[in-house]
Image (tube, rainbow, N blue to C red):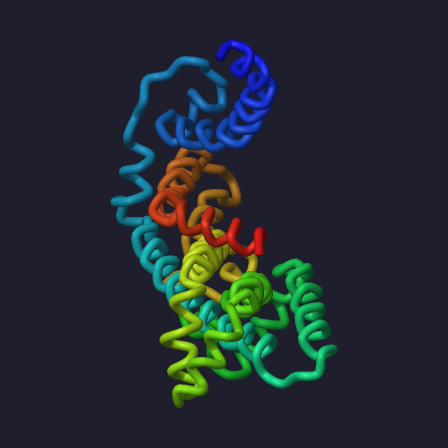
Length: 275
């Protein structure tokens, strides 16, 4: 028992150090939300927690944080649903339709190149297109932009799961008279449920955290949480503690989604990796 403990000790120490590196900035941000501006700037090690920063962020007459929170939930939910639906259909088409072998490779290669482009490089072009069709400062324009940004990753993830569905099951369903919609709904989707859950969670988190495109395409009534947090940095003052309070509140949906869907993420990603 002791030999096994000491043999695993370096691994546990390494994992503990990695966890501390990841958690330290998060814990510091949360703690900063409970400090006064003076205490934070002076670097006091010990302080008396205050709730004023959260009160100002949530309930002050000049704050639109709750509205921004609602906007992020709407945009994240709609863009995730649209992105996952299109990615699933694209993955099915790539791996089950009668395309030449080079088509899936070219298509997936292009999605990878597009995913490598920084969103800020595309923000001005999206703004010009959105303004040309009347979608600037609308949820529709931002949902389409977020879905486009995250679609390459969603296609790659869903391609792994759709490709590994046994073709014998699909052939049996087709022989029984099932059409493509019935095949997708009753055969493919139940088998790729872990992949759908993992992809949806990751896409929602990426959409929730996206800043550059949201800053370009939105104004006061449609701004999302990252844009709202950035507004605490003003011309003559940076409200560090209120910004930290907003950041702490912004972590809640992502943490909740991860806690609820953790087993789906692990199951989905490991299943795809093993297959």
